[in-house]
Length: 227
Image (cartoon, rainbow, N blue to C red; front, side, top):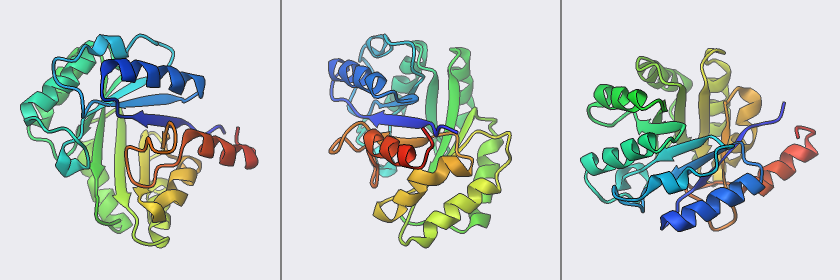
């Protein structure tokens, strides 16, 4: 099994995003998440969807969600809807977003698929709590369910991996823990059923705490015979 790696980038301009997209393809990323935090609702997102042989995820995180988007919630959703209309394969919507049902409907109308995500930036709850979160998310019938926590100890890696193992096999699930203590979960989550793991395109380009680079991950997987 070759673990899927989704490279996450957060460009400052559309032009930079196009360059990063080409580099992700060169590095043989399986998916590409383009964080639109720094791009406004008027950005030409069709110019970020010129390479068709890599599935693209659009996300825009507010400050409260560990991101840099500083506009209103209406502006943020408009940015994501623009990405869907520009042909992005997946749109990432936070479970905590207001008016989630009509937003999901609007995204699906464009033909894009939906990722519903939950982020905990302080800790890793017990497996029973993670399962409650998963049940809340699956009520929206997402194409991918994403639950990301923060590790405060090595033990938290085991919590996320146990949660993955206990998740339904027919559910495309992504789960790992952020932070330095959570790197193990980032590496091995695909072996426990995660649909993909996340990586930075290079050192210094991390979009979340504890991200390894795609080169680091590919090197580890190669040594494990998983390439």
